[in-house]
Length: 270
Image (tube, rainbow, N blue to C red; front, side, top):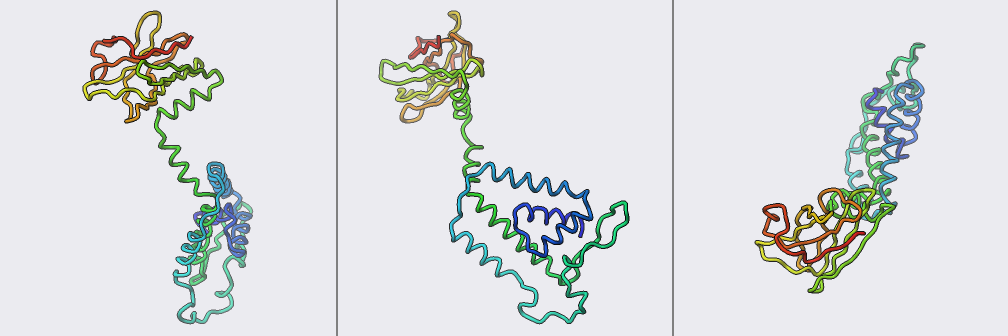
């Protein structure tokens, strides 16, 4: 058995997916090659990482049935014609043969499958069993993908609202829009969440500002959806006592970096 084959067995062992014969081969190869133990740790860490990121969910029976149906379609040794006559040594499973004698300096065990030993087929079954085991761990992989592709604004909002010093304040515009500012001095982040903001023509945009010591500091532009909803992260570091304001500016933002109109809403954070 070479090191790559052992790594495959280590993965199957970590998933409890080895046959009895392959488990024996795995244990014997590990005993003869303790320097391969890194593969054992890597496989165990990988399985633990998967288990920690998904919620256990039993996959639909149709998935398991479909997978096992595919396995049965694989060529089986001796399924269509008798195997050639072999002597007793050839018939012995390589895993039961045990490791070859080694020198005291622990050179690699050179145990390997003989022709027609079925190792390739066993590897297919180990792989299939591993896939089933991962499926049983949960279809939470979809959830993981969703987490990884979440908009940056929602990630920032979660970071702000879960900070130990998270604070928020809400203001209402004259036309009934509801605007909530969330901020955290410890993280230096702030996020504005809007609802029912008025739709703007294509040549206009909303712009965010930090009003600090009577100075307006541009903090980015944003647009809303059809319902006037938006989650906008203010660019730049939030300071305690800032007023978070919104103005209507030309598309692309204020050309000179200062507000060109009175704020449509302003939220005090002090």
